[in-house]
Image 1 (tube, helix red, strand yellow):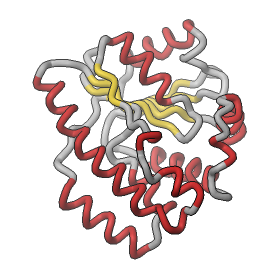
Image 2: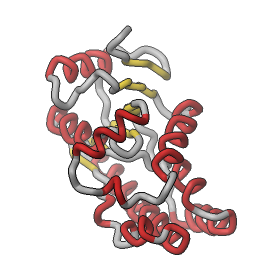
Image 3: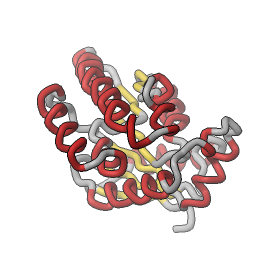
Image 4: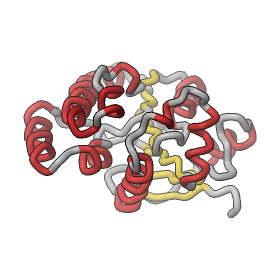
Length: 210
């Protein structure tokens, strides 16, 4: 197993940031995090989605374009990178957040500023049922679940499933985390590592019940 660039993705509440942190520590890799809390428009979007969606997504786009340079620089140094976001995750969020005219503008801007970006050696998609994701969000006790616009979480969960059902750009490991917990359970984390080391083909599934 010689993964140089690993991406961990999943819907809101999936634990992607925490797992990315643990994998980065294990592989002694650079941790590249999206840090949504640093987006100055995000809270305004949650409070008034109709007026702040475009600014929110453009801020993320600029940060992702900058991340390409970081990934390429680490690759040139022969260093590993673990990221908690997929560079093309705007394909999940933009259709939900932006109006048709805003989407047209967003994709035009992206075409101009987004450089050609590297393909991950492995994408790990953390899959979970809606009620499991909601429970995890409530356990965070940060109140964030209370500020999402009505229906927003369900749309995002659905878009994640649609996107990864069709995803073919990189080797994909779909991890069902309804019962499997590679964060709190060391045996489950070892199972994840073992699965990563023995993946064959472009798509693989890890389910504790199988």
